[in-house]
Image 1 (tube, rainbow, N blue to C red):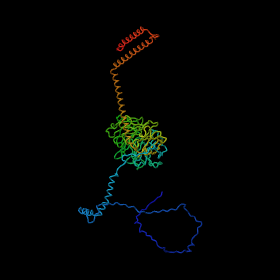
Image 2: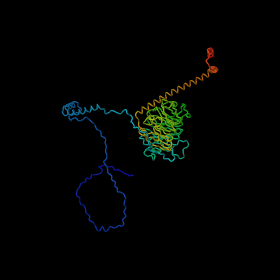
Image 3: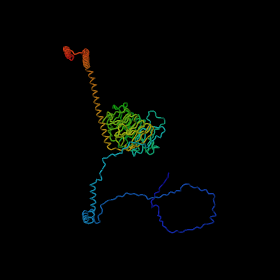
Image 4: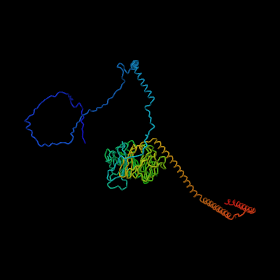
Length: 608
């Protein structure tokens, strides 16, 4: 590395300036050769001389003129008046104006300037230079291109014993860095000698992490402070909450005490929107959500138990896996649990039981991701078991949209920050799915095989162009999506809004229908029970009468059919033309049979 020191010196400190001029050569002294001195020389033979086999170079330094800057104030007063005219005297100025207005040069000048000014005024009236021609076009029309993504960089865990990357956080200023938390979540199966360190990576240097964070327990979550990019919040595997200040080095700056911390690993940490920028809250599978102030981490400022029975009993609490807090809704926060239930909570409630507002149930396993839509906060995304679901706060019975059941387990998901219809999911088979439900609802718009091992987490940059995915072997892959997936489409907001409203309305109609059917079934069941308890003898008698009538009429109809069949068999076939007396006798017999049948019918119908 070349070391250069620049000397800066004023020209006045150099001394008198040298002035050179041309003149004829002058001989000041002439020393003739002395033969006696030549005799004193000793010849040296051979001669060893060192030669450098490189180009000779010289260094030259020059002082340039320094840039000097100073600030001066200017007092602007009315000017242009002659010396004999006082501008403060109104009469003198009026008199001078009248004198100038009578001058011919003044009149000619005004006439020339008047035509130019008239042209500018007419042009200004014809064309509005401040008009916004494309103010309605808030979206850029993107060329029709197939969705795609490409790998930009790969950040590998430098430790010999590889650990899963469990959480990723982007640097809030410029998104030039990535904070990655590494932890083995297999209970009591962590290999011996596994490191507890997590790292902050510079996007331009994937070979070596910029900073190594050294906690006492492996980090499960890691989040940058949006108001101070030097501060990071982390949740540890042993339940403690840690805070780092990168200006102070790799060691922990603040750490919560064990007796007031969580009892299980901390799976969720989020910074709150506050004036100081030091408030946060955390969640764990022990069923507690805790509020903290990083300036005093000895104990939490508030604790909420996730007991949906509202008895505030820790043994009945649901384990928290994911957290969601939207700054535009400062009184609300949401918790995703191990049991597949989303709990909506209110921060400003007076008691802990009142803080649990409602629940949303729809998953068969833990909810690993929970996030509100950045454009429509009433709608939120959940990722768990084999599906991703979109919910509306107005419909609590079921989700309004959902993906198909995949063959591989889903591990994480997130909305696009720039497009309301796009979200991303990761799976256990190492696949990243990009969904655009305006373009396609049944299948993902793009499915990309990122790596062979399972993907555990993902995080999007603020501009939506870059995605960071963490894998089971601690490899963080940085991908860039095509412009169509990170640029707002024309009328996309209106389309998504109408789609959410339509699906919410449909779910409300179905909920009302199901509720009505359940009430009817419940009413019928209760009515049957009451009848069985109160009128059991009458009910039995009615059944017996009905059964007797059915059996009686069955016997009668069977007998009639038998008689008709026998009469048809006994009727002789005519071999020749019968006589008149025979026909009359047959007709008389038939009429008699009909009269007998008519006499029997009233008796049958009148039987009790």
